[in-house]
Length: 161
Figure 1: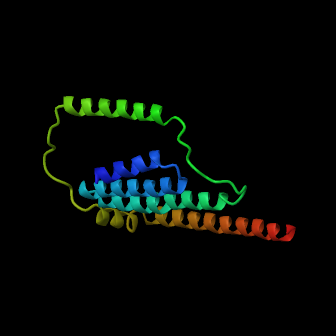
Figure 2: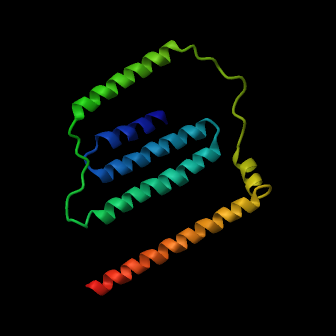
């Protein structure tokens, strides 16, 4: 899983096409979510997939696709200083490996605490139900406001044509 996350990160840094960079970012986030699953943090893995993969990457792709036609230019991720960047990455990687080899790692007693999703769900729908519902109403109001504002801009744009 760590290899998948690193492969996705390398794709983000080395790709010249910004859409491929966003898709590589999605692969990296999925790799991190897999690491969370392997660590026994299933709720954090689910949140990672929902927020980062489902939100950040999709928002990035929408932004690229919607702004690509504004000026009719080719959107790309120009890697001008690639040799300098590779040297910095190699130095950081060497420092990381040296640190990993020097630190005396101790095994933590016991295993994973077990699934955390059930406990968090019970808290959200029990003790913290009111704040949870208030947050959902606020998010719904924000979503409705965004739709109303975007419809006004579309209507005004149609009148100008």
